[in-house]
Every structure is written in C-alpha cells, then in structure tokens.
Amino acid sequence: MTPEFKNNLLTFLPRLRRFSRSLTGSVDKADELVQTSCAKAIAAHASWASGTRFDSWMFRIARNAWIDGLRQIKRDGIVDPDADYDNLAENDGESAALARLTLNVVLAAIDRLPPDQREVLHLVVMEELSYAETAKVLGIPVGTVMSRLARAREKIAVATGIDRAPSR
Image (tube, rainbow, N blue to C red; front, side, top):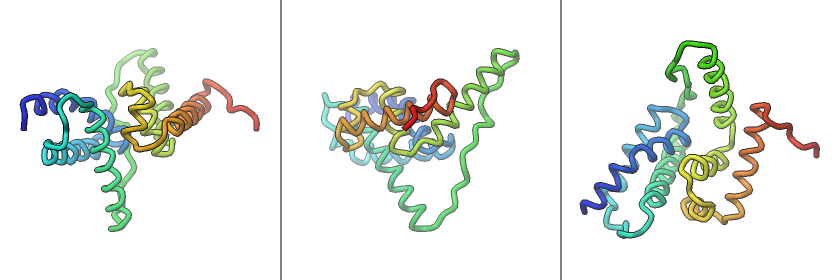
C-alpha cells in the first residue's frame, strides 16, 4: 500500500462518514459501513490508480457495500430498528431551540426521501461532486442525477414549508 493511498484514505474518512450517515440514517450503522468500506478499499488498493478521483472510488465502494448489506438484511430477514436523532448536541437559548427544530424538520424530510434521491442529494450538496462525477459514482446518466436532485429538493422544500408543490 502506497503512502499516497494511506494519506488519501485518512484524509477522506470524515467525508466517508458523512456519506455513510446519509445512506444509513444512523451513527452506529454509518460507523459499520465506514469500517466495511475501508476494509474493502484496503483489500482492493491496487485497483485504485494514482492521479484518479479517490473520493469517487471510495463513494462507489461505500455505496456498493451498503447495497450488499441491504441485500443481506432482506435475504436473512434481519430486523433493523429505525435511526433516531435524539443524540444531537443541545444548546441553551431560543435561537438554538429554533435551529434544532428546523434541523429536525429538514433531517426528517431528507430521511423520507427515497434512497436514490437521498444519495444524489448528499453527493451533490454535501460532497460537492459535479453532476457528472455523481453519475459516475452511482452508475447512472447525468440526466437521472439532475432529475433525482430536482425531485429531492422539491420534496424537502414542501416538507419544510419553504415552497408549495406545484398543482398538477
């Protein structure tokens, strides 16, 4: 394993953890996914080419590991409890309380998104990947990325009261 690979992996861990949290909806499950993803990346480190996008490579590994885990849960019939956000840090004051309420509304809206929209939203908004990079990570056309992102943003806007859904 090269020093460049080790450095990239260590530097990438916070982003991988955020992405894993967006996929799983749980801190504990996200940590498990990060561990699994890192193990898979280390085992396959020779397949990463220096000079290519390390983040895209890792996002793809994490997403595939998550999908494999979901398939195993479905196949084995394992019951997995819903995530909760009761462990968010609390502050005093009215503005902190309002911010927490707003955050909970937004998090709930994001959690209600279909997984495909939540993935795209996270990669584009949080990880700041381009539409083309997101399409490559997810293995879908750029137009699909744009469509899923637009639908995700619309659903969040409606759920948070920012906007009303257009009449159809």
